[in-house]
Image 1 (cartoon, rainbow, N blue to C red):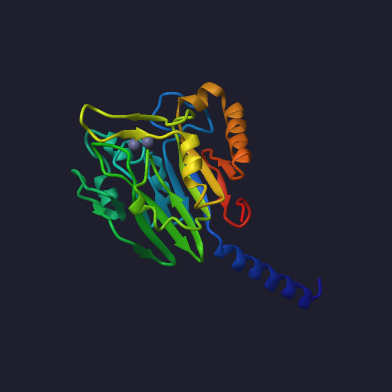
Image 2: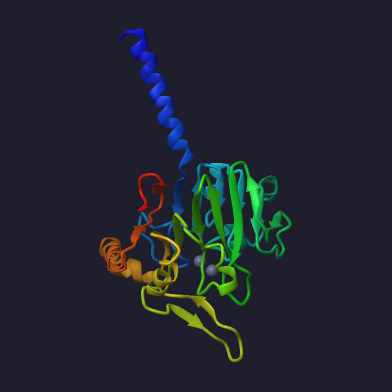
Length: 263
Ligand SMILES: [Zn+2]
Ligand SMILES: [Zn+2]
């Protein structure tokens, strides 16, 4: 190949790489809720990795192998923070070396409490309070980079009106899918505020004004009872009925904000 053609190709490839690097790449690490059933593609508990740098939720210890720059935890339930399950924290030294953020500390000294926007390199990470449990505090995270906005919710039954303000023009919402039926499973003890998970139809209605794209993960038993294939179809159909692009998450999936989402 003549030298200048080779050079031109090299410049072109670099240009493409440059453009592509502006778009966020997300790796879905785990898509199983806190339930017994499991399938090969829906086996690991919650976690995602953004551009190989920022992790949100760490439902499995093995996710540490990605060596993220920071880990943001939505709430201290074990399927979102594996160390909550351990009686004695092994590898505490390892956890201490990491930058771990969560809405509260409990007994975990290595956690940094986060309640305001944090900037890491080109990423702005903003916690948004969610309603989920009576025992633990919970928050989703809005991640912004080059005009792309990703909102990862963790578990929830609701987001209060005053906390919805920042949810405008979100490129992609990543949320839970514990319950297929409307209203999910929202419980209330005598005199207590509600807690639990809302249903997929409610989540679609709730997020529709804010985004054209919803990725579902954290699947409940309904998904495994249906069988992954039928469950995927069900979710996709709900997306078409609502004129919204639904992405059905699986363990190890790579989502590219340039290619896989609806503008
Ligand atoms: Zn959960
Ligand atoms: Zn939870």
